[in-house]
Length: 254
Image 1 (cartoon, rainbow, N blue to C red):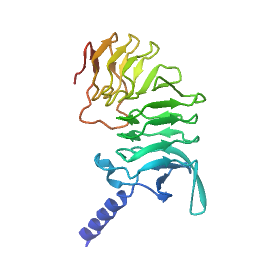
Image 2: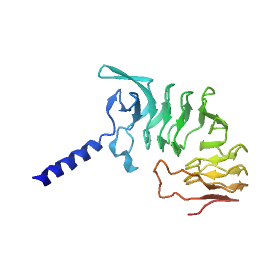
Image 3: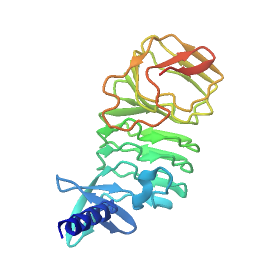
Image 4: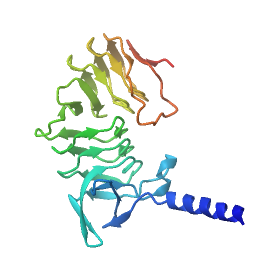
């Protein structure tokens, strides 16, 4: 009898884990957070297998608030993997009120051409943006106190941290103010022709240059492994640390 009960409990737990969201409204899935706000999340429970579509298509407009069971929730987060592998999504409108963008939230969103980060975003997880092949315009609201954009790249406000480089960039000289390149910053960048890394760069996160091609690389820095770069616990098979950039090629050493 005890074995039957344990088996039923295990089966129930597995079934419960298959539901990645608390509720769906107007085709968008949400998780209720501890602070009473909600995070947008993926609909397809198999998205964690890294091969399934996240469940969204077309033009996605994220609302500022959502009503469910006579209660109105503020939407404050785009959770991990939300749009990962959603190859049929053509645009995503992020509203004011979003405070956090999770890891791989925009991973492999290959048909989106424009992304704008609103003023309210306080945290962009390393690796939030990866392999956006058709991204032509990447901007951050000038009113944002934590991040800024320049030349289709995202930096922290002081431009000491390079967060992400859009694939549209073919030539890039990293500003001399940058000391840190975050995880997956150049991930999947196959259009880069020339990259100049200044002496100021001291640290590179995990897979910072993953799957990147470049015709010419001028490295003036001596980069070290970024402390704490694995705090999100996601380490793809192609992760190499530390990352070294050498003239003419990207060479990563385990």
